[in-house]
Length: 463
Ligand code: GAP
Image 1 (cartoon, rainbow, N blue to C red):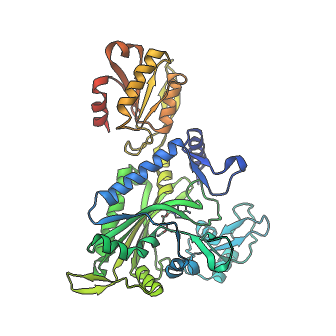
Image 2 (cartoon, rainbow, N blue to C red):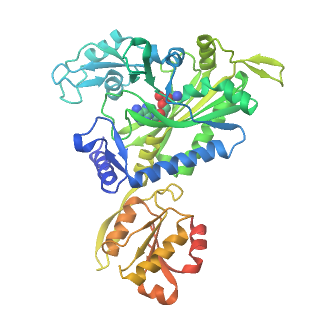
């Protein structure tokens, strides 16, 4: 990692805190590892991402319906899906500094080897034979690799008995398989069709998370698209393109992401093809999203474990079968982070006194910018505030607005640039005379005088 890229992560984390995007979780108590809280500006950005996804993948389509299932599910769900048995990470402890590390990360970050499918003994040997070093203390003296289940366990009821164990869901996907029959019978959808869900998932991640990249509580937006087996390749290609369209909508720069197909060892036994869409984060090229062909593994498993029939009757072919599934999956928090990294810009800008300064500006795509318009009266004088607040009221139903009259106009512009507000509307004393305001463009910093009566239309056109 170059020093510049490493700095970029520090700069983004510090801007995120300073401007109210993301705060460290439970900070006043010394924090809680791998948890983060979304602040006043962050929650707007996150909601914009989630709402846009729901619109694009559910509301704008006839073939996909939504679901909002309970986070806590019957433990048999996780038996059937394989999570109780297989949702394991291999871990090693550094004997010198006691740091606990993910063995797969230790190997894959240092060697061109994938650990998926390898036994604990093989992983231990790879680490020893290659003299891999602890990322915390630099020594190479590890325990043998061990398995660790990533699911958070809790108990239902007041007595902590074994039969009351339940889990916080580690993915949103399973609820869509479990509700397959309910959705079919209530909507009468015909294959191909999909079920979509967005919501929290939980994984007991123990490695350093790189800010919001890997957290123990995160949000996923997932789709299970049910198909006929013979169409899987065509559908896979189609969904790969849809995922790229989503990245275009977010305005993520093409040069910053790439597609990596899983090789044979990495594939789950039931998957014929899986790809990761990877993003060039400042800490390395890492998984942003996934697209998997899951065969009919999940519905078959739930049919076996629940003893409920999961077959679909195809009226076209006049036959029954368990549908196959293509699963595009998107992490909300990773989308947020990629949008932050993509947007972060430093550039030289002229100051009012003719000098230049470095301007930090978050060049979010306008459609996801957390605040769309800032209304900035030049003074706090009562008549100007009143006039500016009327403008705020006239815009707020259509655009997420912020009203700000504190500090100098220069500082306010800087603040709005750092949260990525596309347009600042400055209200000055002349406005009281000519019913016009100055609109400043975030990216070009060009200013234009616009009549207040034409402002809504001007902004509609600009977005
Ligand atoms: N249903 C399939 C599934 O859950 P996954 O690759 O384990 O697949 C899907 O997770 C997406 O969820 C990832 O591509 C990533 O965007 C996000 N994700 C997974 N674990 C995460 C974590 N610990 N923190 C933040 N996001 C995570």
